[in-house]
Amino acid sequence: MKIKETKKAQSLSNKTWTMVRDVATNERKANGQMLFICKNMFDLFRDGKMPINQYFGEKINNADPMNMFFNVDGTRKTLIAKDFGLFVTQCMIPSLDQNLNDFQKNHPYEFNVLTQASPVVMFLICNHTIYEKGNFLNLETDPVQFKIDWKVLKTVSNASLANVTKDEEDQTKAENVFRNSLFENFFLKSEKGKDFWTTFRGDRGLVEFVKQYFLPKKIASENVKNAVESETYKQVKKMNDLEKGVFGTTHNLTVVAEAEQGKGGNADQRLKNEVEQMTLTAEKIVDLFAKNKNPITQKALLDLHLYVVDALQSENFEEFFKTKSKAKVEFKPQINKTTFDTSTGDFWKYVSQI
Figure 1: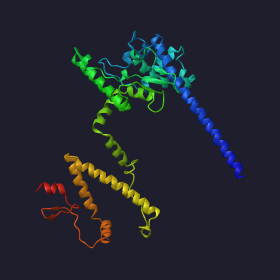
Figure 2: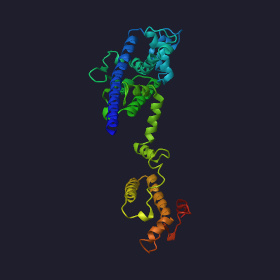
Figure 3: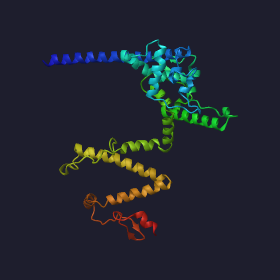
Figure 4: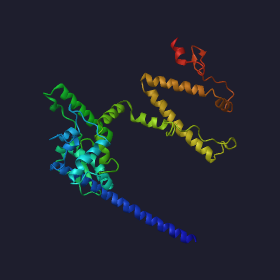
């Protein structure tokens, strides 16, 4: 009976694995197909077969496609789902010689494909001078990859700022801030100055990049945020998060039954491991504070000391210390030969008055 059950389970595993591989193969193929669709839609635009005017309304004639992306003052527009959806219905569907009426109802899957492709098509149109030669796909990879040309991110050189108005200079500086922020938000430092090849979807995929590209205000605000939030800060904050952080959600260390303490059991070893790593972290924090000369870190160093002094006055520590020595040790700070009680007084206020 067990042999039959094992064979049945093995058969199901093999069957499921085959299905997984089939779906993965189709996904790779679909990734490539989506890029071809985007390229073909871009070609339709270049050939004048895409009614861009309809994006702005029926009464608009000879509309400049760049008005989809830039305001009158030259600043970048923020494009979101509703804008991509408008582009699909007013520009993409008509360019395929399809009837717009009930298209979404009669062709829901096709509509979804066009919706997914729309941000990339708009990105190509926005950067048509860079991509007009059409050589931005790598057909040698599986799946096919797209080239995010470095020119999209390259900052405007200072030489081009000559003989421009103050407004134009401000626009150029704002554009450079956007491009630099976008690069820092999406790419590695080692990738600066290079073309970047990526798939339609996936880790750091084209769709993810393009959606960031069309959120200039968000990118700029994140850049400002990054200016005051270091990677160290972000990681430590993540650890201290009260809902998800490894420290923030930990309220107790491993509890070892009194009868089992010191016997080297699993619980003893687990607690020992926790204490060793947390002590290492605490010492690292103290070291970082101590060697930084800024008043902020030096005050924090003493605040930590006072916090520890309070903890050393707890019943737990007092009982532990009695097992080690009969000596009377005073951990409270001495101020002008007077013992200061950190548990009841404000240390900084007290010393500031001396």
